Length: 166
Image 1: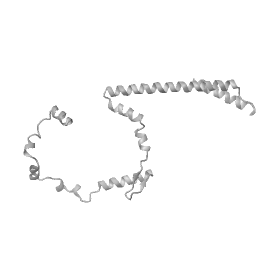
Image 2: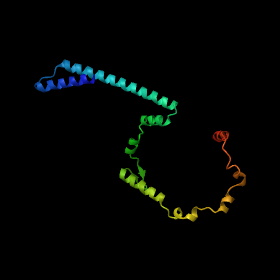
Image 3: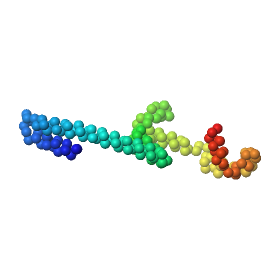
Image 4: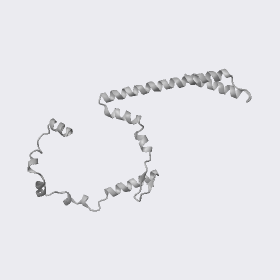
């Protein structure tokens, strides 16, 4: 169908260049091209609809078969969130002084500074070994003796269900 349309278009264009500018191409060719164009669009819509229905059925099968990664990937593609599209979007953020940043480079620089500030250790505790070592006396005082007997016991399924139902 598409190839027929392409050949007909080339034929029309060839006749237009061969004829004088004052003469028009054969109306029958134009009519034939127009009908082929309509038929091609109709078939492309039908094909797209069939592909969409097949993808829905495949996604439902994935959900039923507990293939959650594939199913959620399909769902995110449907709503337009893919890894490539997320990286192209620029989400404005506020600067520390309240100014709205919309330039991609400025936003990246602001995020870099933000994470540097989070990673900074003004107290020096991250490198201080004594800060992280808990004396045994403090550890034994903090554990309730009534609770400590349950720490090594197995977790039963009924306990998990009760925790979720509460």
